[in-house]
Length: 306
Image (cartoon, rainbow, N blue to C red; front, side):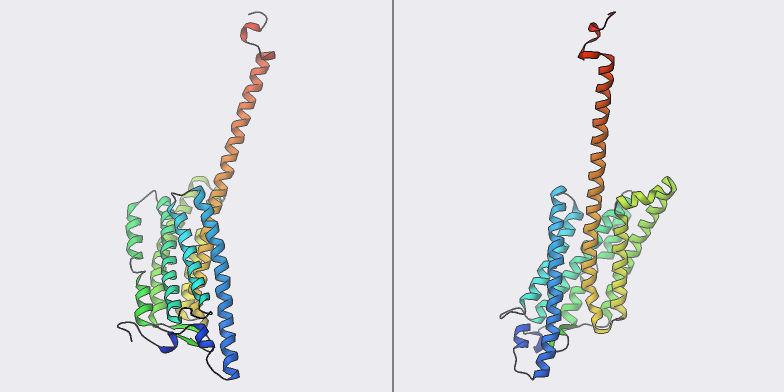
């Protein structure tokens, strides 16, 4: 124990140091297999988050003032940092397992806050800028940094032969995250469903087309992904692998939010092009009408009888 931080000697060494220890053939095989799987997962995460970071930068080029676009970039960029830190542990002099888990926990917290801010912005607009929604969502977001404290002060990190670098967290951590996510997602779901109902009453079945153009489908997918992954983690439905759903939710929400903003940009671009085409057509029709009325580019004084 370092102050309030639990200490385990197996968590204070890197993956490289753990794997290069003298061990039996069977032990070395298990160790190599588990760390190879974890390295492959981190490589895949690095690729996905790098791609999402690039797409977020492209979104920011169109609207640099958008808070939601900045949240997408921060969420993806922190994912890149997390994957790179974990990958560096397989090399000599890499960070220990404890640092890898701490970076993951910090990234998961940042991802949750970014997702909540993006959903809040959409819900705020759907509720005609009702400030009560901001206060309610803000109060529900305040306990989210508590995840960091639980991981840092109440959890043990260590390297193992069968599961590579793992975290032994208190049983209440998944349920703590579940309560936080459930409460804020229920709030946003109620707002979005009410907005859909209101649109349906105004324009009928055409509201589904409007919702598709606005990317509302992706927003519902973000909420659903968050709830499903949190339930799986809280109930340990997949045993020791259940904690991986924290990362799966991070990847899924990052990708879905970027898709949502790209669909809005695409719909806006199509609408703008349509307006330009309609404007050009109107000018062409006006010009044609003028030519018929005043032939040969003449003026009213050139027409016989004037």
